[in-house]
Image 1 (cartoon, helix red, strand yellow):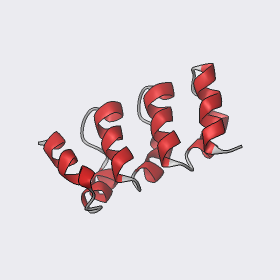
Image 2 (tube, one colour):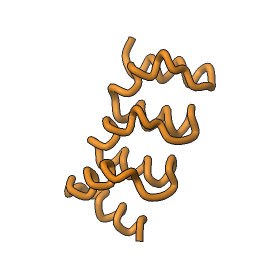
Image 3 (cartoon, one colour):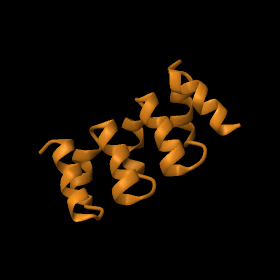
Length: 93
């Protein structure tokens, strides 16, 4: 099963499915979507993979956590030198 398939299965059921999380957390996009739309809160297991993508880290900060990211995600985003870094800095001011 792919992360996409696992996410869609959980999404279709509309609830957190812990046995699918090891698959979902392999992909930044589906980890972010799982946190946002299924869990409707932090997906701590997925944060390491989300932190490797500046765009999803930024969206995770705004739409999931609604505040500052955990330090390791915050630092990864700031050091990414991505277009989302500037937006994130403005967001946390």
